Amino acid sequence: MTSTFTTPPGGAAGAGTAPPAVTALDVTKVYGSGDAAVHALRGVSVEFARGAFTAIMGPSGSGKSTLMHCLAGLDTIGGGRVLLGDVEITGMSDRRLTLLRRDRVGFVFQAFNLLPTLTAEQNILLPSQLAGRAPDRAWFDQVIDVVGLRDRLKHRPGELSGGQQQRVACARALVARPEVIFADEPTGNLDSASGAEVLSFLRASVREMGQTIVMVTHDPVAASYADRVVFLRDGLIVSELHEPTPGTVLDGLKSLGG
Ligand SMILES: Nc1ncnc2c1ncn2[C@@H]1O[C@H](COP(=O)(O)OP(=O)(O)O)[C@@H](O)[C@H]1O
Ligand SMILES: [Mg+2]
Image 1 (cartoon, protein in one colour):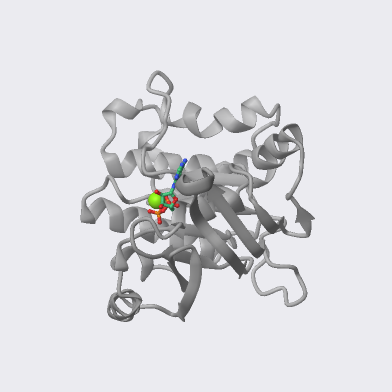
Image 2 (cartoon, protein in one colour):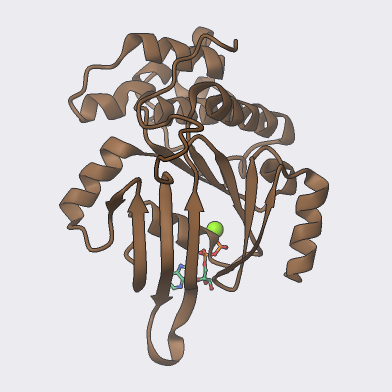
């Protein structure tokens, strides 16, 4: 299943001069105010390369989900800047942000968020349909083969296993050829075998289709599928690892003392 894949526009791996897919510059985020203020992000600067699979790790409450939401334009930031490619999203109107997310960003969440009355195929094609875009059938076919869903396309979510449902959610994100996919604990509801399936597929989409993925996880095994791991503690990035293994990730987590 290798070598026949084309690289999506905007997702070219290894293009030396291309800007990172996502850039955060000194991003801060405070929830609440006064005595109740929670400083969820305290000045995060980080770049996510195109065509790379990056995991964000850290103890519970360290700001992982907050960072992902701020990078994806799902939440506003208190200070600093966020760029998607070379487009600054800081201060964009809600309407422009909505369009930008629709056209350039994909999401995979812990809950699969599939529509129960639609088949797998209809779920996968729904975002393009809502955006008024004709689906690219050749690309759809490539994605379906990578996720291994060919014989499940006519099934409804209730007729699929958890792992298959999450693969449908991944396919739905990929079919739109987003510049980046944000995944928050995508294997959090899966047993380890189904989790491994989904993670292998996410990695294949990076290696074989040039996809960019930023994944939040607290699981060292999940993180070891990534090319790079960044560690958050108390709203700050404190270290990072390249070519992680479950062992080096575990050591990294231990050294956070979280
Ligand atoms: N909507 C919110 N209102 C108030 N505090 C929040 C909200 N969301 C997150 N927090 C707080 O911000 C901090 C970071 O949370 P979060 O980003 O969810 O961490 P993680 O995903 O690493 O577990 C935590 O202290 C959390 O309690
Ligand atoms: Mg979280």
